[in-house]
Amino acid sequence: MEAVRLTRQSLSIASAYASLADPECGGVVLFAGRVRPDRLQGSSVERLEYEADRPMALRSLNAIEQGAIRRFRLGRVVLWHRTGPIGVGGISVIVGAAAPHRAQAFLGARWMIDRLKQETPIWKSESVRPARPRPRRPSRTRGRSAG
Amino acid sequence: MEAVRLTRQSLSIASAYASLADPECGGVVLFAGRVRPDRLQGSSVERLEYEADRPMALRSLNAIEQGAIRRFRLGRVVLWHRTGPIGVGGISVIVGAAAPHRAQAFLGARWMIDRLKQETPIWKSESVRPARPRPRRPSRTRGRSAG
Amino acid sequence: MAGTVRVLLFASAREAVGSSQLQPKVEPAGIGLTELVERLGLEFPRLRPVLRVSRLVVNGEYIGSKHVTLRAGDEVAIHPPYSGG
Amino acid sequence: MAGTVRVLLFASAREAVGSSQLQPKVEPAGIGLTELVERLGLEFPRLRPVLRVSRLVVNGEYIGSKHVTLRAGDEVAIHPPYSGG
Image 1 (cartoon, rainbow over the protein chains, first blue to last red):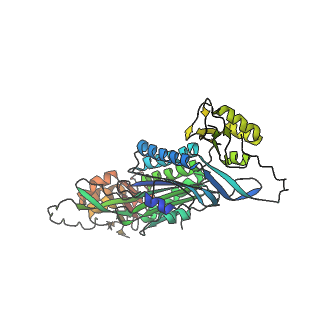
Image 2: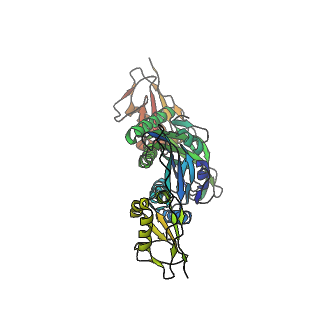
Image 3: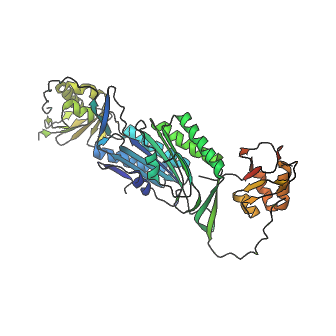
């Protein structure tokens, strides 16, 4: 499986681990981010919706992957993000690092997820189920194209 | 699955991840240690053999588990070690931490594997395939019981 | 030749405008990025607070300065603060 | 009553002795841990360097001092440096 993925399909920890096979790398660290139900007060999140500026996000993920390999001398890397709707408990992101020694794998994985959150053009928005019905607002007039 | 395991059965990343399910914990970090082939010069390791002082090792693993939960406020923990022969590429240990935020999960997992390596009575020995045949030594007389 | 630039809107920018894409017309001489952003803010008042915190990407490059002239066929992406992971 | 203590040997200690367990006899008055360790070192010279770096566990407790008397039925585990993970 590719080191970098931006996909609407569900992400699997087992597949990520399989992608990190490398006989020289005795240490593997995997990070999974998953959707929590407790984001908003007074309502429970059923799912999050993830969107990306796809070409820019892929470029960012590839730069992070290459940077991590160089900086932490990683043998293999996984940097997978899901887009579209993801239900509570579903995995939105998997970051993985395989290295000869565990310190590199831990530092590399942490560095990648921190960088991803800072600089990869991906956004989540909440699809909530209100705790109680809210009054309907009159529908807003859609603006026409600017210019 | 139990948080702490010391088993001769093979360890699965997918099972470890499943054991870390917790709706309040959006961040999961898994560490897997696996057998490398390159331990000895002039020979290639086919497998390692792991042994434990079982009651003492279980007590140690349980203490590490409890310490990690308290210290890093982890929601769930996995601390699994395999014993017996493990072939090259096989997983000898899985450490997992689920927490509301990723920093805790990273620090908790790192702390657990560092503690395990320092203070859990488990040993590995090498089962090697020599690069070339070695001369046979005369068999040593086994000592009788001391005392 | 007159034509349009393409404005890509993501996340809260898309929600503020109600669309993921706009195609404003530009004169042959082009339009300054600053001017384009002002026009968008006037037309979509809910977009203004988003624009203040967003990064702008012109033809796939992050733009530090707004002293950039856009011409027909150029693409501007409005990136509100990222929240992936 | 005379009897035996149980000595559990792991990893390089087991390899040095060629057995994972010993059952040395002890007098009713017991035997000091220091004396037991010396006896083992005399009987199994290859065990000596291992004993110098090992931790000793008596009846499931790590023993800091060797001023401990063992009696029949007690258990001593010899723990060479750990290498799990």
